[in-house]
Image 1 (tube, rainbow, N blue to C red):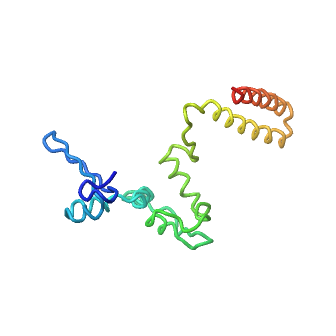
Image 2 (cartoon, rainbow, N blue to C red):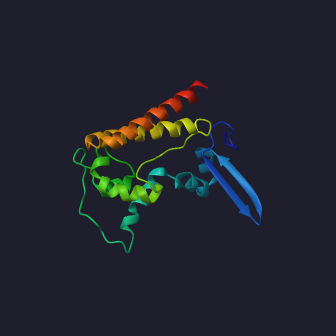
Image 3 (cartoon, rainbow, N blue to C red):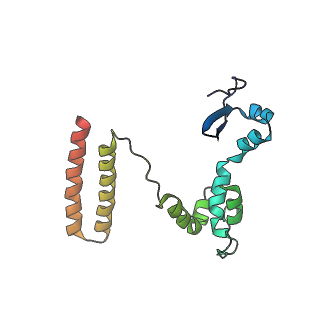
Length: 173
């Protein structure tokens, strides 16, 4: 969508105003928003994903919530957890492991799970679910074999074969 003022640059500031039941929408680029005044310029800078994440991370430092741990730091890049909460991003890939103890409860609170399941397209849903089930059964089979639970392993092997045949039939159509 192009800016409704200059009609040249992409609109990045989208503002909806409702006064006495009458709705007005504005779609401006940052430059035109700045020319319109402080209100639009501040709206252009108001949302920042890093600030959103930072705000969520700072929930545990809210009033009434006691401070939990002393300065937690990443061993690789030296970033502290408090720096991470201010910036809203990690310093390196090892930060995920360094701050895992603090991140897991946060992720559970945000997305109600520790892992992201993603979305499955409706048309491919049955096959995707089947492949996920197949992967889960193979992991269970490895676990059963490692524990020398061969009766359970045989049952899992049979389930895997049946599911593989079902999936092969679905892909053939």
